Length: 230
Image (tube, rainbow, N blue to C red):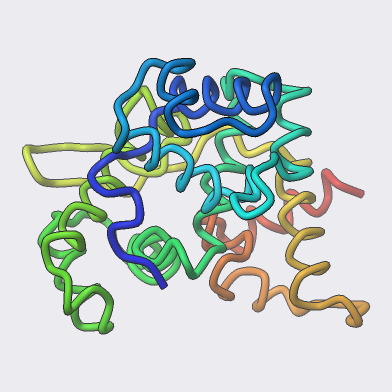
């Protein structure tokens, strides 16, 4: 589990894509070389690399892009497509090691209409998340909310809308392509149900990291996607 893994640096698609394109073209780079290539300071360069790891786009031990990272570089190198952006959200929402993002996506916003950052922090604390590191917990909550409300990040998903100085509401998500749903279902099956031929629809809707919670889908909406995928 990780609180504060990105320090205070949130998701900015332009910077993430620049780093990915650089790694794709140049291979293994030192942090100093990455800083020079993408025009950021030392701490931010470290945070960008960490984000790429949490997103499953780069293997930071082997220091190379993952198969998903390579695929996105081939198909959408600037991370502009909304399906790409949904995949980025999914990669964090299914990853327990992206602790705050995982919890808020699966256990918090799925049950809320409107809320404040204080509500989110309190919910995390009650769940035992970040109790020993309140400063980083507050920062991580801000990063999550900012990412889903900022046009430089994942605002286009329409998951959240900022409606006041510190007030947010969940919305009707946009840009969910049937193939995105199919991708999530396939990835979940490969990861968690490799030997199972059928999965209960309730599991798809309620399991942490699965398509229902990640995309805020109702049963009717999920069944509509099933029909489109047939």
